[in-house]
Length: 434
Image 1: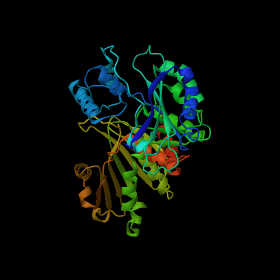
Image 2: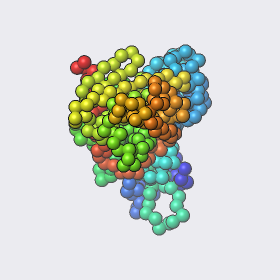
Image 3: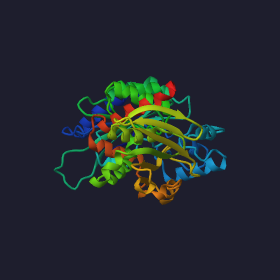
Image 4: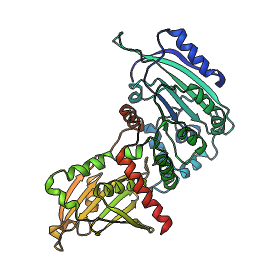
């Protein structure tokens, strides 16, 4: 992390005094220093899993809001020890409800929002506001404030000082009192981002406040029920809100790997004869798979026809402009290892048929591991011309992915993502009409 000169250690203040205090702080510290001219980042940081594990005594405090390797390891072990399905996500309601049973009432040190990951700190946010909801449903709002200046070897550099504000309490008190604080702390002349670092199912009234306030949004549609996630995307898209989805960001390697396979002109004709697509996912959360198949269909000009779902898979039918049909299947798999991000794509198979003779046809296989590639070769695929590639897993943290989005200064939704959202909604809404 970049070295920081703390102008003031975290100080607890009545929430009514935060705004005036910060204004006076900058004036008293340096009359020429009004803080970095960058952006405001607001973070919804429930960290329910970490809170539960700390209060359960399964990991040591303090609570930081970071999904550390220790938290991941302990949570996975708890899932297996308790006999939960191996497809259980680390953010699932089933896991959290089990952890909440017989929790201690002890107070643990809570440092959420007082420190932030180096990939974000290097961007020098002018103001970082953390909403830190607590498990205790009778916890009134507490507010903390601190200011910092990263140390620089270049004294002549423009000032990049900023401040940190933490609003902690139960969800109801944050909704009733905390949002008023955010109104007062908004810096109108700077871009403002909201990172909703939790499930889209929770605290809809707080999420709606932010969607109505003009912030650029960073969400993760791997967190929340598919129906709720797609409803949120639909509403945001219709209201022309800038949407950045970490679930879409994590598809980048798959999109780029597939595009590179068909980069040579000699392989382009394969795309005109695709008949079947299989997408394997970890668990049964289908949003990321819908994004991938929607992106493919958008790039190739296919039209969605129908969808049907059985106990084992989801089958989607598309049509090319010449009337030929394409069948796409989403296959949920149990990997034997609880997932951090439920529904991650782990394998993709495209079959292109130009002949009744198998060896004249082509099978394109992408897998996150070589064993997944071999699994997708089953069913006579080895008799075709095989094009295989292992797609590197993305091990970057959510904080790192968020920093990339912040650094891009994207004030609108990616056109590719926007088109994929529209098609994914068509497909999902097909359930209602089938």
